[in-house]
Image (tube, rainbow over all chains, first blue to last red; front, side, top):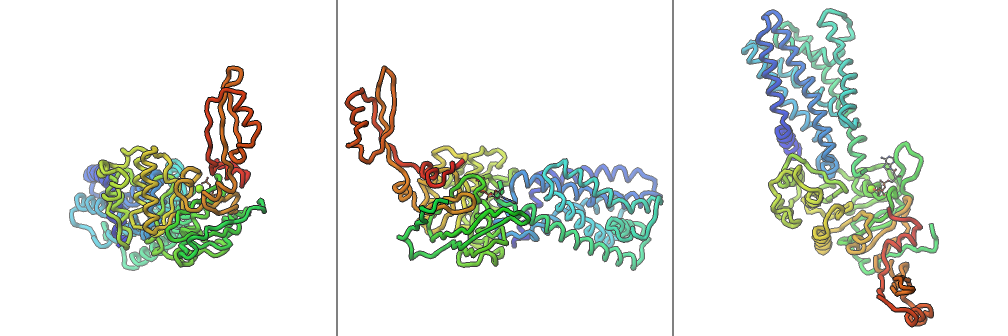
Length: 234
Length: 302
Ligand SMILES: Nc1ncnc2c1ncn2[C@@H]1O[C@H](COP(=O)(O)OP(=O)(O)OP(=O)(O)O)[C@@H](O)[C@H]1O
Ligand SMILES: [Mg+2]
């Protein structure tokens, strides 16, 4: 199956380019810091770290990979095969989600033992990873240089971290409930504190699914315009 | 365009099946005013090597993008392997191969790994990676990462990538660019062999020599219009002139002069030259396609 081949190749590509090692090193640093924190703030800190893992690392790694692939001119060769854009995006999203899940569970288990809600963490993580990887793809295909990517990423991150104001007790708004990053934090935080109701879970997942749908449509159309229609343009 | 020029078609293989059939193809990029292609008409027969030749910006890549199903929203009719190109899905790509001017390869992967991955994306039977690599003289480099390859090696591997799915229709953009003469010869021989096996080849190039060596027919495209289509020998005999270059010594200096080959025996200037001066050499020169192109289109190729 094409999708499985693309997934296998993605994972191999990420190994060859050292992404798995980078994740491992970053995770070890996170674990070392988290283990030294006083237990009152360990829950929240672990949740933040685990949130930032797929959200930040996944986002930057997918950007880096796509810019590398552009440098190799790979898309021209890839999309004159039967491989479809949706299969490619799906494989890319899944391959990066796998690293995120592996490292997040590694961190969670070492720092917290087995005292957290696995299912909730899994749901929160996978949705976060899917959303941010798709965003990363959308931005990376439409830029030409690493600097452009970083610039857009910063603007974009500012928008996304707005609901953090609430968690840090700086500012509150009902609108924050619509933010994907809030949904993500609620789910991941809930997995560690247990402080989350069924309604909140369902609502967060629902918000996330809508965001992922919008992000996917956006990324797909940027992919067609910036990659597929440009095949053979040089 | 010069209306004295008539589009000529090869008639000898009229009864062969059309692999590509383009009728009144016009195209404008979305949001642009300028028409990039206007009313292109041509067809490519099974087993034919069809050259597409024109200066930069003429619309070669745009035409190729339409025939390979990438660009939609054109006017006219385009049929490829008996399918309406505006309606094909990803299955269409099972039977075509495309190599672009610049290689498309995973640099951190070996030659073998690259071909194996691309092969895995097809449902149709694929070529053996080692056999292909051997054909282009890369047998020693099978397990070397592409980042260590020279430009020529990458071009040859990229050529193999286009052949991996045993395509019925092969699109090649400047297939010999960046290759030394020996390797260019090998690649040309493979292209000829594919054509003998009944595969059809659409070749885009600036290089007249490649066209002259390889193509059964060539289309000249300028400013989005096809000016003419004919076989290289016909073009040369119709538009090219065969010349004779004579070198002689005059006032202790070596000079040269060109004469038309036809009617040379009655050319007084030529005959006088032979009698009056010490002749160093006389060479006859083939008409070349470059000259034909300039004559027909009024444009240089580059
Ligand atoms: N994506 C695009 N959007 C708008 N205009 C385009 C686009 N791609 C190409 N063009 C224009 O279409 C015309 C034909 O371009 P095309 O790339 O088909 O030429 P070409 O014959 O392949 O040239 P070259 O020999 O340089 O490859 C050019 O004027 C070019 O500027
Ligand atoms: Mg071109």
